Image 1: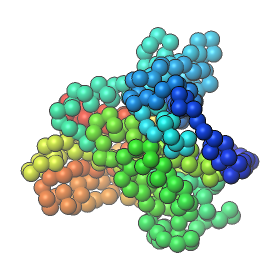
Image 2: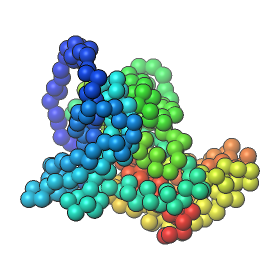
Image 3: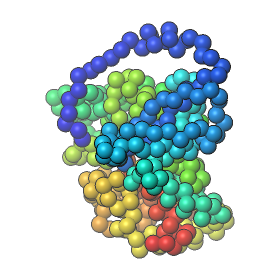
Length: 367
């Protein structure tokens, strides 16, 4: 958790409405280019005006930016390139305006180190006939400007965990306005958000994205994160994806990843689920390295074997077991088909890395 303290700077949002109500010329569309910076976690964006309404990302031009200011290049050779890859509606500007998810390439046209989408897309294309579906449960924590969890007493702690998960009431949940606004923004944008709820630690929330096929999982989750940061910005609140923002007897934050293939979803699919789990058990260490941006160091603070987690050092699987690496939902075990839940990915994971290694291990046997 960050220790930096920021002064609270706010503008009058009502004043913005006057300008947003101005007519926008038909031949001018604002496109917000969005990319992942050199940390592998941070999101950056800048706006470009075009003279047409794009219907697909590939219609938009490649653009450049200063990579030396995003931890992606040296100042002496700082130009990096943004290649549009996915298009969403802009819930902030609305109208014809768009959000444009981009891949980042270096001066030599090779992918930036944190452009993990490129190899993920190649893997998903290879496995396309298997129809890999994903759903990711994105947990996060709301922080005040001083880095303290939003709504927590400044000189103490709230009551022990228990009443907060899916809670109702001002003494149990903090920041619901942000969650409601974010959900609506995702729906408007076209993000495949399928739910949201208060989590176990107060000021901790979760939104779920999916089911998404192949590369769409990473695209939709990254835009969902971008929208969450933007909505929270309007409310003067900070979003943290730290997997263990508060040390002690508090739940951490993960990105539980639900996964299935066509065969898993059909009658008799349980044997294919069990086969996938067996393959994953042989490559636990490699998966752990792929499941957070710091190759397991962040997740080590969370995967302790306590607070509904497995130990980072051991692989385990079980039916309805939230203390296992892989959980088979009880309904899946009863039906004999469905999906598995990988509970190891951290809240700050790159979904491209997570989904790529799962498909490599279970379908392509490329590990």
